[in-house]
Length: 141
Image (cartoon, rainbow, N blue to C red; front, side, top):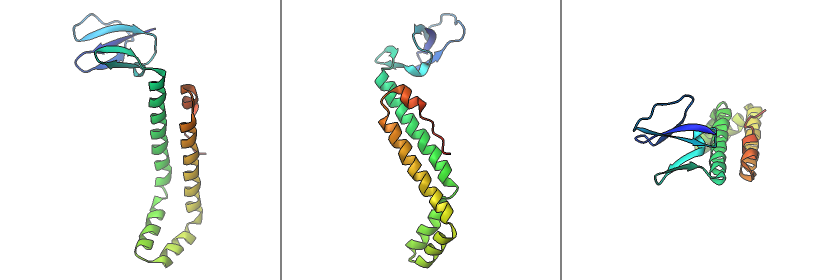
């Protein structure tokens, strides 16, 4: 059980680590959760999020985290893909082939990262519980 404060003007909920004096700008309440992220204010009522809502939010958070992480991994070698695509768009297949031959390891690394990304996406989508989702570590090794 933890204490929270709901600020009426900002529709924001904060966890209290110390007591607050009564004031008309906020409402103090107790709920059986440790995080204000588990609480919602809807239609004038404060309540805990359902497990389904928490699960869906965690799934979307994990997918966004994965997307950002993979973008960072691929960013280092994306210029090669762009140069190959430009050469192909200009009809310069010779330059495109030269680039593929010059950077085979980096192109292969990109492919492996993309395959890993798809595997992790599928793992996130297939998760059945909130605990299972939270246990998924997004880290490429």
